[in-house]
Image (cartoon, rainbow, N blue to C red; front, side, top):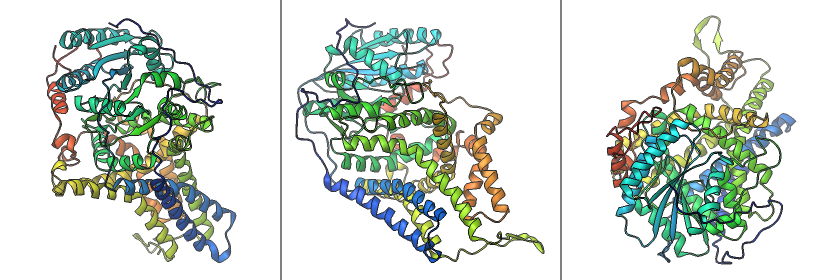
Length: 610
């Protein structure tokens, strides 16, 4: 089911040696100095302000070692919050850049790597993509390749049956299928195998994920953007979420639609032509990728050695090192993907991302990497390591409260045991710190909501003003509820990696588990929550930490309930993809409901008709 091979060398890059691609057009890269000055200036000044408030709080008796450690951890964790606020502010500014015209027609391969995902889902997604692409007007040519690393023989057989139907429907030259006997190098190795065997026949390749859906217009616009500027090595779109059913997935979908675009626009502003790659829904020049982005195996054993798991960040850094520009264009519409339906499925995927992002720390100082590429790598690792800082700050805050209290606070009086006597927070500095931290946490969400409102004053694309703002309140409330759980799970993921546990690359899934499974999975959160409640009962826990303890103790219940479908959640948390779906998503929904079977014994869904 594959065309004639056209080999293209893809040498493995040496991270300790600088590399410049002589084929990369030199000069002309945009460096948005003003945006970068604002971004890092705002984050640094805000963090300095927090440090000064802490110092003022502690200054009366001199800053002890414990207090100094609290200030350092607070500064470390708060900086990343301030950075996201500054990025959201940049995203609210008008005048976003759009793709520049058209260039010569490109022969483009659309690559879809798969690894054991449900066959009916693959067939459905491919069918609607190709059907919409057939309606698009373009001079570019597109050929779709399904690159299978599936291990189960029954699923491989089902994939072949699916391909036979798709090829009958769309033509033998439009879609091809290849199955690898060994999944060496995981997804990156799957792409590399295609490049080295068929890459010479194509000028561009557009990489999808198994859950990706793109309109024909989006595919053409991405290809136009790459074609119009010869110095571009890669163009990344922003995938919007669709098809969410459970409460957890709908919360993610709403957040992606309302806040994600604003943050993405801010990211695009400050990165300029040094953007990042997210591994899918992006287009790149095949020869540039082959010449510059061959990934080496890292020395040593997994999890820090072996294949690079989070390959996309490194491939982007290698392309940029070689002289190619990388552009992130959030304004390209029609790029979609799904999200895990349960918190547990989300966490399991996060553990692989955590391992991959921690691998980046050993590649942070690779020869020739640009400073912005190093920032992408470091920021990706800090997305997980910052939770260690927050947890350490939590513990030190408890010790600080114990040290400041000569005696524990008595919340329950023996004379009236049913009446709770809450102590007063009489220090202005404490109140100011709480307002600053919580305000900065909510600020990106509020800025995103306000910009969404400005773009759609009647909020018709979100079900109207009442539904939109009610949804916003619900999403913020659940974010507060889920944040402590994710903090503990990020710590678990980091500690697993540091302990040498290799997460590997497993097929994604949303299988439901019983109550015992939820209790077992969230045992860590429950243990921390119980310990915090014990400290609170002893009178040493600050009041503002009590909701965190409650959230952790209720982690299994929160996880189970959020993984279910709720009628009220379907009435709220609406997004433009639901209210005003494009043709490709309308077709996706219609064919999903047709319940066509691929005769795959492991399938439980539907796909396109034969």
